[in-house]
Length: 172
Image (cartoon, rainbow, N blue to C red):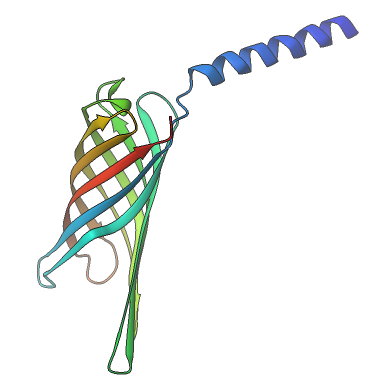
């Protein structure tokens, strides 16, 4: 009985090591310049250069990465301070299995929350999706371009289009 348990533990350990060896391990750190365009009655345009957001991608498989992303802006003047923020979680699905580490298209559904505080405050929950292109230009560096559509569920159910261009650094 003890021999069977020991063999089972060894088999599970070997299987786990083999599975770990096949799972991608390179994280993707990135910054994006963004242009956000509000649609409808509450139209607006926001351009953030050099960095509209920061992100980190955690590979789950060769095709899928989970990617938290965030932004924070604090503006102060004339005795007033306005803070804006955005936090979202997306799931990159690479259309080509090997494109996570080379040029290729991806889609990215996401959900998040954004808002501001200052003379008043407001929060908004949103969801949407984007399509983009990743293009590594050095072994550990790459560029990324994306167009996304988001629907805000609060604040009169508004919509936004976001265009982004970014740089990525891979930990491999």
